Amino acid sequence: MDYLSIPTANGTFDAIAAGPADGRPVLLLHGFPEAAISWEYQVAVLGDRGFRAVAPDQRGYSPGVRPEQAAEYGVDELVGDVLAIAGALEWSRFDLVGHDWGGAVAWWTASEHPERLRTLTAVSTPHPGALSHAMRTDEDQQMRSQYMRDWRSSSTERQMLANNAEALRRMFEWKVPPSRVDEYIRRLSEPGALTAALNWYRASRPRATIEKVSVPTLYVWSTEDVAFGSTPALETENWVTGPYSFQMLEDVTHWIPEEVPEVLTALLLEHLNAF
Image (cartoon, rainbow, N blue to C red; front, side, top):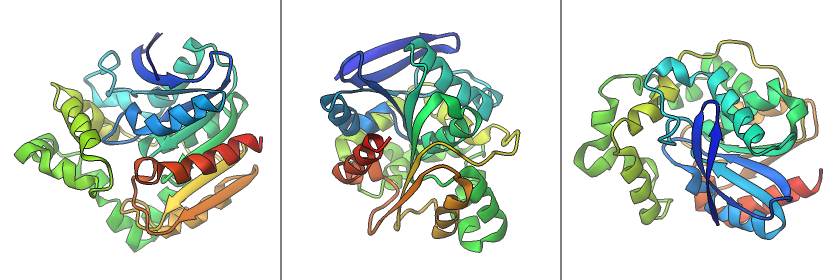
């Protein structure tokens, strides 16, 4: 495993990487409240298979890219980071993988810059258009998404870090190794880190209507996901015009990359090797 510092005009991103420098490039984006190491297994296996896999700590998670204002965490900025990182790595075209918030950023990137992507893999997160529609029309998804509004409160940091970050620990549903959870909490306990991560929720969005995605897409969703219900998951196929594969994992929670890393990696490799 390589540990990188990726300098861009937006700041310097920390990242983990594996594989030959001239391998087929794959960029993996993490979600909340995690970090690049959530992809450690996938990065290692992809690197062993000859891919050049890079997983950055995203905006707010990398200390070198941690603006204070919530407005600096909008969709334009997050997609811009993806392109800036790819540019710094000298990748003209690459495969993009994202989980949770990373999945949302991946969908937006694929919609707005399809010419830059070879494939898209979204884990847990449905297409934002499908999710937005479900949040307006589906009572189940409305209840699941309430946390997005709740976390905009200024008291969220205090509540999440109280009692040795008990609320953050419960969030992982005991499906992520305790040592990994400890590392996430250590990072988010640094001054300003949790606020930066929560600013993803506090930024105003969306600033535009997202379009359908034309690149070859794999969407992996799990039946025990507390954040995303079946309505937007099943509707996502209507938002992809290119080749599309939907994989439903039974009895798996939201934390797919770390709960069932072997299963997800096998699906990812199959998708990558098909295009």
